[in-house]
Length: 148
Figure 1: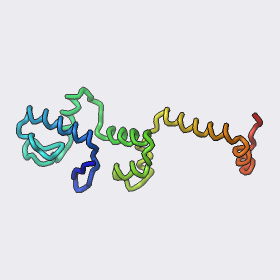
Figure 2 (figure 1 turned 30 degrees about the horizontal axis):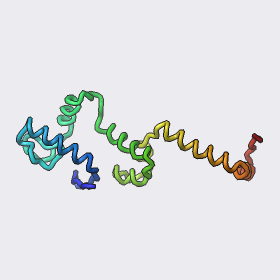
Figure 3 (figure 1 turned 135 degrees about the horizontal axis):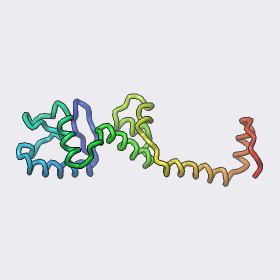
Figure 4 (figure 1 turned 135 degrees about the vertical axis):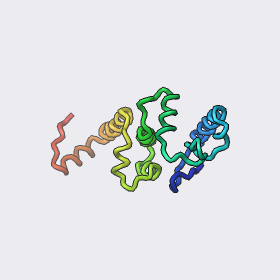
């Protein structure tokens, strides 16, 4: 993974994202030669330094992509959800998002229904393979388990 500096924080960026950013940078350079070779994702068209606000560049990006209702923050939620649904640990996702608290990361990571279904199928397989163990555990906890 490559690293990019943003506001003093290190941000992990995968190769596919770097390739896409390079492509977008090449396209931008054709329409704005001053942007060519710039090291920043959102350079200010005036100074060439990082843009002090993402409002204008993000508005322009959304308009070009036809995604008027997409918020930058939505991308963070999608990022977390994609990772969690691919079995990346919540601890790793927390570190990538820069969250100090795991509860914040839990709010970001939305589980897909397929992921939830797969999890219940794992339990179903355990119950089917070990019916006595499940019955014993339930009895130890004072839970009545009907005979199947």
